[in-house]
Image 1 (tube, helix red, strand yellow):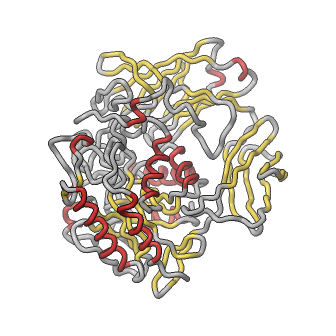
Image 2 (cartoon, helix red, strand yellow; image 1 turned 45 degrees about the vertical axis):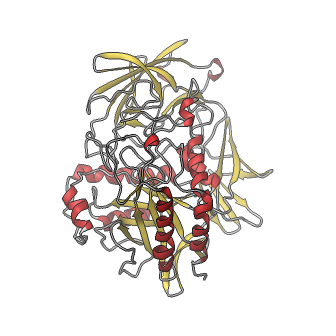
Image 3 (cartoon, one colour; image 1 turned 90 degrees about the vertical axis):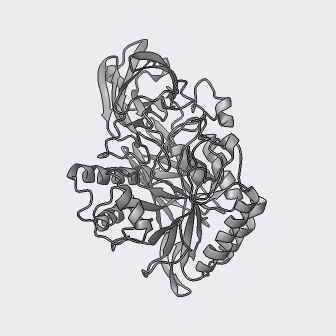
Length: 558
């Protein structure tokens, strides 16, 4: 594998990811980033590592892959700022893959088992004056009982390098004893209701006006409310003061529903049929793997795809740092969010036979391990809770191509109870059951077509064509993709034809969205519209924006 630096990777700051507060929906003014140089011990050696990049990555400074299941021990010293006296000190981890045990000054502070979700600990009582020692012991065992996404010990093709240890920001923040623990906003007639968990009384400030917080809730009136959409991503930013605590957040107004329009059920955004013109987004980077060199890289990807006319990213079997979702909120990019799969994958059952048309089977007896099932359902609930406040998230994908699938109808009902406001794709690709808001197909090897169910139609994966630029490719020997091109002009010509000759005619008949594979190349895969190092684009806006406009105009109006 070639080591490819992104442009941001070439100018990495001493403390990466320190420029912005890590939790956009619940910001405080005071915090301390613990990214930067730590010591890391594994394989009998101790060396320096740059957090928040995994040891397998180039940006970590290690560039060495631990054995699957090997114990990694991180250490660093820190001192709590003197101005924090009298407040509680919280220690936050964006994500650690997969098991993590955290000690402060040799005393256990926290443990966590999910490699994609954040966790925190109140470490106030473990601190001592002056220097403190923080130790994190991490093990990525790729146990399929737990969510693992597209990581595989023997990477290759559509499977990628595992990511071990700390891969998101580590940070401290001081908080008062009585503090805002979570915020929730729901639309009500004439405005919104903002609910603050953990406090009762206070003041909400929005656009120069104050609104009282009583009993943990404030009713805020909005004059001439503006709806959020990718073309007009309107965010309402507000502050909340409750006793000694002061936080900042934002919300947006948008509705999602299904309506019959022009003889077909349609996915509607803000009451109007909308075509979700999307791309599969794996969230891998040539130099940081799961973690880009800078959070600004998310904005750069989003702007590049919007310039081509795309309005949706399907975040594929991965959860990102909250900064990704904030950039989608701010810049106007819809997210179809996959749950991160667990359960064992079988090539014959999950890929080969379905691509030959064997896509119908019951799933109550699939993946019967009760522990794995419960972990998946718990992870689903935590994912919904974590991303609930982001208006960009418009659809949840529960299962992808049968990987880890079980009792999809029951999972769909559970998800609807957790979040009745967003669309649900219960079984993306195949093995559909009864409960789902859409009929979702993956079509790579035949002409595009609509499904047979009386549901909104979604082509949740298409394309996957390889256009390899050798100087920007990680693997000079192997290439993975579903149709291979060497001539860029031919690739652009055929991509345009795919949309104009196959996607476009299906929109009047009920197609509500199409997701092309994919945003960028990833390792062996060279089927991205951007290269793995993000240094070259294979399609230019002037070559494709008119296609995107034609898709938009083809949507029937209510």
